[in-house]
Image (tube, rainbow, N blue to C red):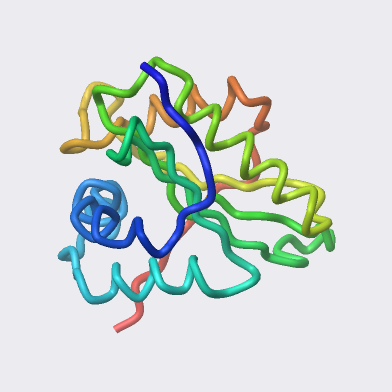
Length: 164
């Protein structure tokens, strides 16, 4: 499989729109919310437009087979480290095992260095059933294996609180 990884461009928006429910499947499940196409479109626009965000895609020909979005978060941690957070990482099932995520991650690492950040952070839910596949997306266990394979180290637990 010949896959090219690059920064997302405006011409990718129609495909990214269509992939939204698949790309966001884990977040929708973890947060117990419905997928909102309008919010997804705004998110895509922000990642294409704002200087503190980047979206990278991997394309097999003209078909997008992977998406990685990152956000620069200066002083995210109390230690004062400039950090880039992985907001989204998704690879189509058919493209998994072909280095797509590694290619995307390589672009994100290069951008992390470019913006002067000293670390990358990826939040993965800790309370999961390791045998459960999450719709079209990989399980958190797959994500943990990927990040460990990219030399990520476990960090403080991630938590979320719903405010109503």
